[in-house]
Amino acid sequence: MFDRYQGGERAVLVHVDFPDQNSQEDLTEFVDLTTSAGIEILSIVTTSRSSPQPKYFVGTGKIDEVAQIVADEKADVVLFNHSLSPSQERNIEQLAKCRVVDRTGLILDIFAQRAFTHEGKLQVELAQLQHLSTRLVRGWTHLERQKGGIGLRGPGETQLESDRRLLRDRIKTIQKRLQKVEKQREQGRRSRKRANIPTVSLVGYTNAGKSTLFNRLTEAGVLAEDKLFATLDPTHRKIALNDHQSIIMADTVGFIRHLPHDLVAAFKATLQESREADILLHVIDASDERREDNKEQVYLVLNEIEATDGTIVEVYNKSDKVEGLGARAEKDPETGRYRVYCSAVTGDGLKPLLETIASLLSLEWKQTRLLLDGSQMALRGQLYDLSCVEHEDITEQGEFVLDIKLPLSDWKRLARKNQIDLEAMEQAKD
Image (tube, rainbow, N blue to C red):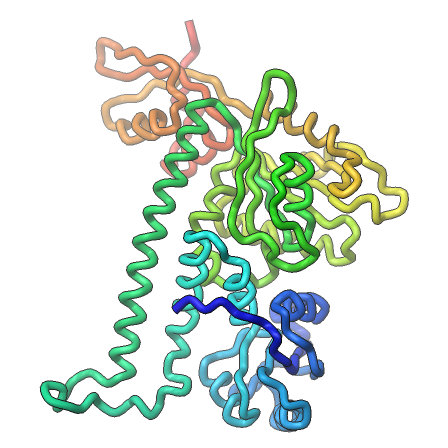
């Protein structure tokens, strides 16, 4: 099922302006996505509507215009900068006489090009299959009849039902394999916690310069291109902050507005790196005019994967492209978050960034004593899983007194996960 796209296709792009902010997409970003997929743009058709048309998404006059351009230019595919329903895709294909791919399908196609590890390929295939499962009827209407032949006559399953069943079975198989990957990643995180090595994860909008910054800090040599979603598979490297402190730095996949939910679900194991990190470095392209909107989109995804409990440092990369924006570190008085202005290309501002990380890691620890009764053994097990129990005693009443030290992000995550007030369980040390 996994197809690696070879590129070289010729496309007609369709973009619709809606008055509703939640439905709006960015045309410049759509063009960047298309070129990142290696597709040649023949023409861009734009229009305005108050709401999508049920049959063709755009009006009948506009879709006739698109079909004429496809015929004149001999285009291979029509790309929509929006999410289409299966019936809309089918209707437009019948009219345009060529393939129709929506925004989600285009992003999945780019991910298929970028996946090189076994895990990455599995994640992309899962997302593709989940997306395809709702569109299986397209082009398969001739198979609605029942199977024929000896032993297959009568009220058996249709070919379409058989294909759907095979699709479901394949999805279940991939999900089981990804669960194993998630367990392996969890073991890696536990070993890092046992070694008291904090994890710092790079997150941010796609093409913000995360991989370039990662290469500059770690000398890892990972792929860094001026393309959307150049990085798909996460990479880890150990670096020294100073003479007595080291960290594990993780480079992760970039986010994008209206990131398909199939992708969020498929890349759960990868995104888990961001959830479990001690510090998130939110890399922002300081030279991008849409940086504030891009920031908001990243925080929406982080909220969706519940990765906002930890400390977040906003790293304004490419500051050398903005006049008067010097390299420095500061604290935002409104949000309380640290901001670092730097350039991954020139190296300016990287020293303040590392100093900020080191100072936060020295502060972002919780060292305390907890009193647990017999009904809280699940919490006790979770504390041992985090390798944060330094000493344990049992009282005459059978209660457990635990001296613990763990990152503040894990402390907050435990409280939320168990829906308890951990501060109320703290005990004064002798």
